[in-house]
Length: 275
Image 1: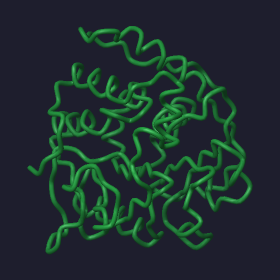
Image 2: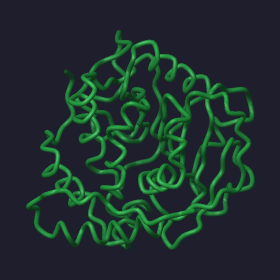
Image 3: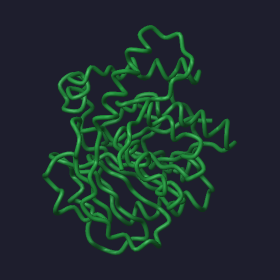
Image 4: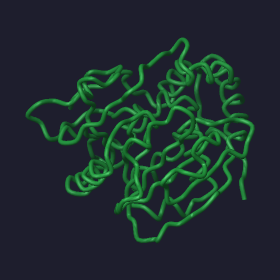
């Protein structure tokens, strides 16, 4: 049964915070998902969650081959709802397409057992080019280094707002204050402390830095960029006419408003850096 998700009301003196929270609440409530099928075998300890639809490039790497992790897909349109090679498939059932963050918030809100079901998660953008073997390696590295928060590095030809995340020669792993959200990886312990953050940003802006701050303070571990594995971000970040940002504007969401709202709440440094 799907309930209403209410963004966390925390003390803040940011201008129009109440208005922002009200808009977010309506959009979270409009992000509804209907289960299409669940063919999980129940022995996987890691999961990849990815929204997909028109423009998704997952067919270039996601196959029906063996994997030790579960693939959970949210189809926000009908393009791949009957064809994606996923273990668990949801389709849109609400008034809002949802973003990766509002749909993941909906997933774990409606299915709290999923938080306990997996030791590690990856939230993956559908314009990331990777391989199933590389995802396998990433989860193994998370376990080996006891990481609570991480991301693969980005290839040199990736579209990227923060060059710090591009693959560094001679490095296997670097520690940073936070990681980006396009291929976001975290442990069960991390989500137990940071679950509420996904209810506080439709765009995802601010979740990355707030999550990094939370992991370092609550768990005492450092987020990491895994240079041993790189993925390619294939699409340009177009904040003016890109489909994602156009959708946010149509929904009356300003990513920067969400970022600064969360910065007021969690007092993080608005930049990424190595530590």
